[in-house]
Length: 127
Image 1 (spheres, rainbow, N blue to C red):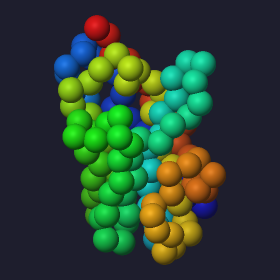
Image 2: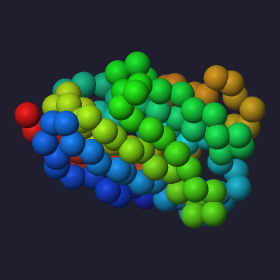
Image 3: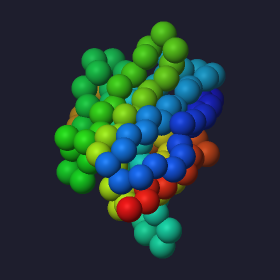
Image 4: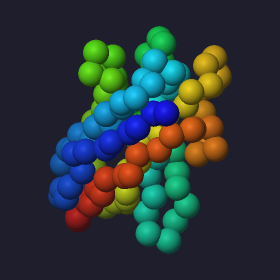
């Protein structure tokens, strides 16, 4: 089993920055990649970014490319999502997820590609 806990959400004005974290515990050695997803009220969950734990390769949704950066700290079993130039449309509950199927390429971009999920953290961006 893998447990994921997000932290770092909050409220920010448009143009500001926030960093959310995803700390993993349990069978962390089984994690192949970690993804961030977000879900706004009344909308489906959407992919934001993903990172491989083996080689650090990343993938971003077009809507966040150039503004968000995903990174990992293997020693802390933590993945970060640095969000810059925030927009009101970035408002959502952000959840991290872990994929334990090794070797998948490209990295999973849909929720069904992930096995474990955190509880989510709210990010609110005001105009």
